[in-house]
Amino acid sequence: MIVEQPDLGHYLDHASTSPLRPEARAAMIEALGSPLGDPSRIHEPGMTARVVLEQAREVVAGFLGARPREVVFTSGASESIAAVCWGVAERGRAQVLSAVEHSAVRFAAAQHGDAVVVGCDRTGRVDVDELLAAVSDDTAVVHLQLGNHEVGTIQPVTEAVRACRERGVLVHVDAAQAAGRVPLDFAVLDADLISISGHKLGGPAGTGVLLVRRGLRIRPLIVGGEQERARRAGLEDVVGAVGLAAAVEAIDVDAEARRQAELADDLRSALRSVDGVELFGHPTERLPHLVCAGITDIEPQAVLLGLDRHRVRAHSGSACASEGLEPSPVLEAMGVDAHRSLRVSVGWSTTEADVAAFEAALPEVVADLRSLRR
Image (tube, rainbow, N blue to C red; front, side, top):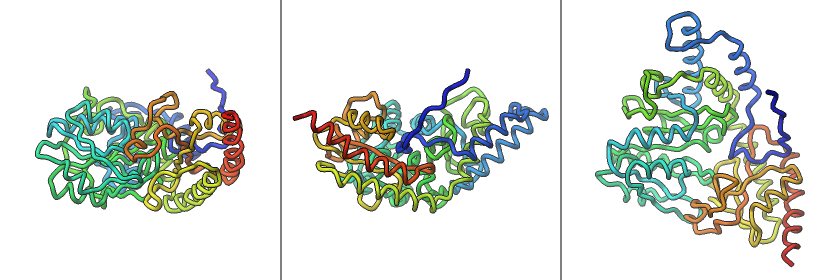
């Protein structure tokens, strides 16, 4: 079956998923042409696959500041998060999390005990003292994202991890939105568990990582085999791991962050030029690539459709899925308008022309929609 290539247009939705980097595509095509077997077997195709898989693991580990043995390949951040919530549940009945965590964390934590939710301020930032105040003797883990997926606010994870370590409680950091956008060093951060998404940073969809601190043992979510050192059963996705390794090798975090911050500032300027727009998130402690704003009196779906007619692809921060009409729990927790928001995000493939297209289209779309209300 031949799949027609979609028109990405002016793609400003990298916070949802980032297009596959050419380096990852090339590496995967080469791997697909190799006679790779089951990495658990001792015949030549199997041992070849094992070498390829472990080389990819070393590359990913180096990018994340981890030891190769601390890297567990998964199908994505959602699986990594589910594995954490399930794996630590036997350590205590409660899991502490912030009100602005991704739905993958909120839902998985609630399935495995009492989810103790801690609030945030109007910028989406969590107070570490309040987070620790929610910890009890029955707390299995504390969840705190590195950077928010809707408004981009960066959390005080270094302080939180240090405090949790002093209390002797495990801490899991969801870095799906932040990895590849800000420096991330597992050894320096000293967290117990970190979840990573492959497709968010230009790697292949269906790939992810769970970093597990050396010496920590948690029960596996997927059982049935001894793969990934008995931490995740099932035949390893060697080609996916190769693609993910190639993607992270292509990333210059500092250079990409500087460029994306400049492009995001231009997006903010465009939003500020429109009446009735409020920018959300922390003014300085934020991810470089993501901008979220509320537009007074206009439904977000109408704005998205209007931008799409101009070939500008964006997203509403009001839901994890475009089909959802429920208000955003993140924005509700922040105390801002949770029904009318627009999220635009840049990435490795974004150009000045993409941003210019947004700058030209947004005022026209908003004006047209407001004229219909008269």
